[in-house]
Length: 200
Image (cartoon, rainbow, N blue to C red; front, side):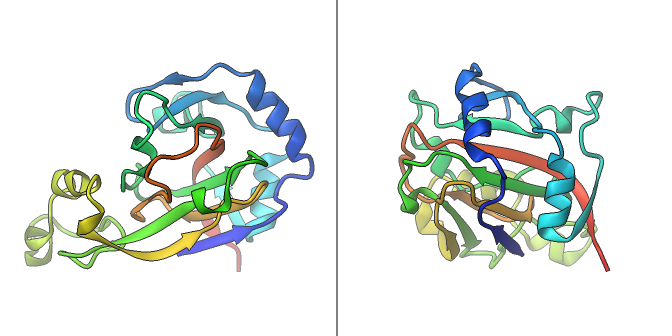
């Protein structure tokens, strides 16, 4: 499942100015170059209001899974194709929120969601017993990630265009990538990962 909200931040240029003043570096287990995290005042409430969800486990500094919650990402010039590698985010039971923040990045440089041809999976399976026949017949996570660099193993499910100040929310288990095989070096994205529940 995937949802989009346009005009997400009330002051996106202010957020962009902050991002441009930060330093970026390659970090283990992340695609591209990553900054420290930044939460404009009221961001959690804005996410909840925009998507009709209740967010929890938002920013514990003791939890490694939160260390990049709200960080900005840019493509790594030394590996420009990395952002186009098909993958899923971890923890796969959480939600991922991307906010597109460069006003000059082309619309075709958004996010694509994929289906793995051999298995028919659109997301990494969750809550399946390792002893079940279904689990034994699934490709391993290593095999899926290995296939992520070759789009012949995948078919497109949906594409979201890059648009300044657009927010995209989806399950972290969904297979996704940057849409272009070599993402523009200015393709700035702010990423959040958190747990949530839908409001009644």
